Length: 214
Image (cartoon, rainbow, N blue to C red; front, side, top):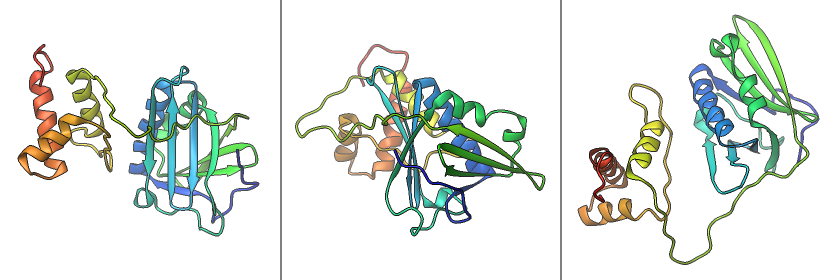
């Protein structure tokens, strides 16, 4: 675990109000999954990772450069920094009326604390979430070879609907590995991956209440 000794103007991620709402929803998702939340700091990227207590399921959100107003300079963050906090404590720090109406958020590290600084009506509200002295659970890529996964069509449809909500900001990208139905639709139709994904969603929605396979 690596921590920065102080928060400076060059060592934080700055989120706009709209980006803050997306980040809040991502943290809520991680908090429902398990006890810990891991944050990976990179010069132009912030990754939020969580897993259930049995390490049988994991979820990860990668926030790229264009998600932020500004990111730490490369001179400050030269390598990955991994920190772990209680997911519930992070969710509580992001919850409340002042947080919901904040105009922006700064995320940085100070000593053994994750610092969240909200800007609102010209003022600032700061929350500090203690870091845990533990290593994050970060599963790597699966080994080479054939892989298979079974997932109920209705559940996959709900996951995709959550990532692309109607009338609201959606995820920047969705990555699905070894998902044969997406690959087969794309290869058979000769369309783009986006078209294949949309086609898959329509098929899943149509069959969500049916026992017949898609």
